[in-house]
Length: 171
Ligand SMILES: NC(=O)N[C@@H](O)C(=O)O
Ligand code: NI
Image (cartoon, rainbow, N blue to C red; front, side):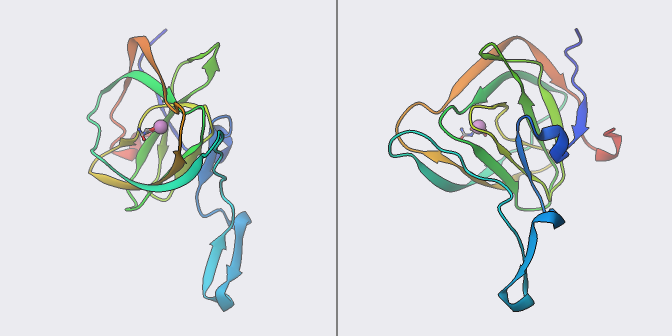
């Protein structure tokens, strides 16, 4: 089995096993504020569990990853979902994996446009934030509160993510 990973375009259908895509989906749009504003309603839902769990809104400023990238670990948050929405129209990578008996399977790498965010479902394996090209800011909605909300897994051998830029190479 090759450890070189391919990069897929992010679509809500392909990402569905892992969470939802946060983008201006016309099907969710309603006109509000007397016609001044388009509301893209309820694109995702924060899912937090446990006593005294709170939904919090954060800013993450990610340094761009360097490529080829040796992906050696994945993480998940058993007590809450986690969303990432880019703030500067910069593409980025959402990396996820199915759970296979309590460990992540082969990672899947999705190239998100600068107008696409994701909400990782609660307890879904993912790689920590992967900005590409330049320092990138993200609005992050996730869980705060008591309890251990981080589980990490380290692969026996790293997977390799090729350079996603220029994005024209993504098929
Ligand atoms: N540690 C932290 O809050 N961030 C990670 O969970 C991540 O997915 O980037
Ligand atoms: Ni995370």
